[in-house]
Image (cartoon, rainbow, N blue to C red; front, side):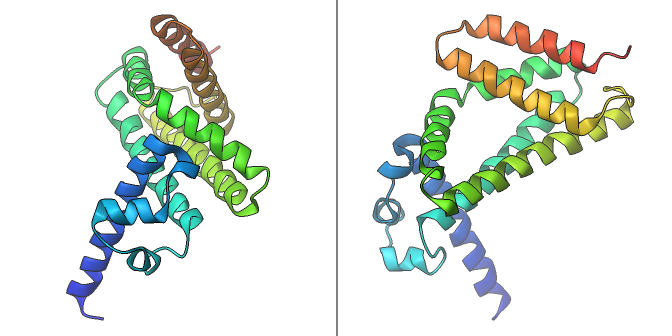
Length: 194
């Protein structure tokens, strides 16, 4: 296959994933159809199926895109900042997505109880998310921002659980500033050396 065709195919695939990402966030998994994505792109459904065999496969690609965006958000939040300022910037960035992500994630958890493919995608997505955080923590240990005495995997799991819990609390009515203050205090305490 000539290089130009391969690059074109990759560009089209990325455009499909971005469009699907928007649809999943706005309409949820059930409310999103391959037909609605195709219509937004101005193509036919069969054209989409040349790239993704089904909606579950497209959702898996969207999860990967979301993880890449999270990775970038994590890096940008702490770049040139100390632990408290970086944690504040990260929490603010995560707050931006609370309503859309939490409602979509809740829907996906319910679907996972009856759909093995969705469950497998979610399990893999969680593993990858934790690995992104763990790698970030390892790099921060090398720079001295986080103590080398701490287990990066345990810290990654704790940070992920804390963030998800606080973001869910905000969705349920907790004051955003209170949640952010708890986040910063907890991260500071979790990373403190004895």
